[in-house]
Every structure is written in C-alpha cells, then in structure tokens.
Image 1 (spheres, one colour):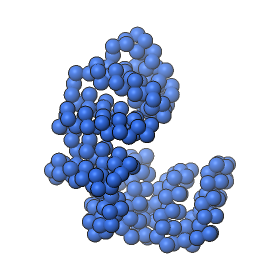
Image 2: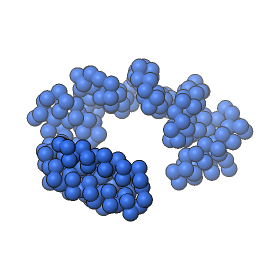
Image 3: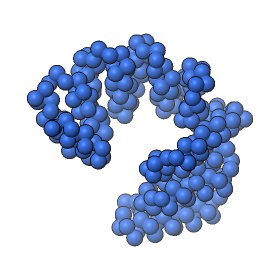
Image 4: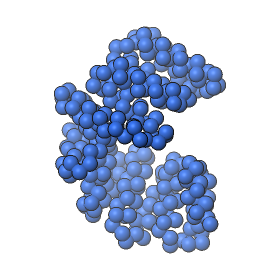
Length: 271
C-alpha cells in the first residue's frame, strides 16, 4: 500500500509526499531495490540531490540487472551534476559506459551535455558525434541534434550548426502533432528556440507565442521569447512583449516575476 500510494503521488507530481510513502515502504522492506530506486528518484525530483546519492548507491550495489544498474548510475550522475560535482558526475557516466554498451547513445549524450556546461566545446562535439555514430541511423534523437547545433554554433561552424538545428526542428515538429499537452508546450519552446538559432525569427516568435498562450504563467517562456528577440536585433518587439509579460505577472500578483521582468526591461532600454 505504501509503495502503490507513493507511485500515485509521483504521478500526481507530489514528490515530497511520495518520499514519505517510499520511506515507510523501505522501513518494512529495506532490501527492496524498487523501493530504494523510487525513493532516490523522489528525493532528486524534490531537489534533495545530496540525500538521493546515498540511496542511488545502495540501489546500484544491490542491483544485478545491467540495464537497471546503468539507469541508476545515470540518475546518480545527473544528481552529482546538479550538485556541481562535475568530475564525479563524468566518472559515474564513464562507469556506466564501460559496463553497458546497450545504452551507449544515451550515455554519450549525457556526457556531452555535461561538457556543454563545463567545457571545452570541442570535447562536447566529439561526444555528440559519438552518440550520433552509435545511434547508426536507427532513430533520430532530436535533442542530440539540437545540442549538436548549439555546440557547432559556439565553435563558429555556422553551416553545420544550421543543418543540425534543422534536423532537430523537423523531428520536433513531427512529435508536436501527437504530443500530449504538457509535452506540447515544451516542444513549442524548443522549436521556437531552434528557429531563432537558425535566423528564422518570425517562425521562432510564433512558436514561442503559442507556448505562452498555452501557459501564460510560465515566466521562462516569456523570458525566452524576449531574450531571443533582443539577441536577434528586434529590441522594439522585445520591449513590447516585456510589457505584456509584466501585465500578465502583475495580474497574477507574482511580484518576483514582475521584478525580474522590470530589470530586464531596464537592461533593454539601456541597450
């Protein structure tokens, strides 16, 4: 009952309450791998990454199935990265890679994202190219090509960057057709960012505006649109959307969001 209730609470996005249930479950069955893994995931979902590491390691030590152990290692590596323990995170990814070749694409991609954060970009590029190579054309993974486009852009390889971004965008747009509502909003944002990255400002703006219409309270959506327009030289439009966002957040009485937007507006005015 504790375990099933914890699963229900997890599905309801109530990680804090799920933690209580999984802890109660483990008090009764301390050797349960599934209970240990669920508790670790719930702790991570609640931002309690330091605590999650202990439970991830116990689960890794307990588990005998290679694929499960790899997933646990990847989750542990992610938690380490969120704690800015980047060297330990990379080492954990490397341990997963050495043990399980069936998850090579995902592990290389995860390592590449870590290198995008910590540098250098040349190493991130190599890891992304390894992910693409090991994928062997079985199924295009748009996130890999999106990140590849970003890395190539930072390395000043414009044509190759545009090609990678467009490959990602095409796949995202296909996914958008059948996506569930929450996934659809995320896809709208990432497609919008992709179009801005390749210089198609009008398309990028339209997609981001659709995301804002779907969830006006999402401050990050507003900020993405405003900063993307500003970087594209569309300062007047950026200011217009900033004013609109300030009104939306003011009506919702979200003072911290209003303050952040007003600070951004001041910065745009100076420029």
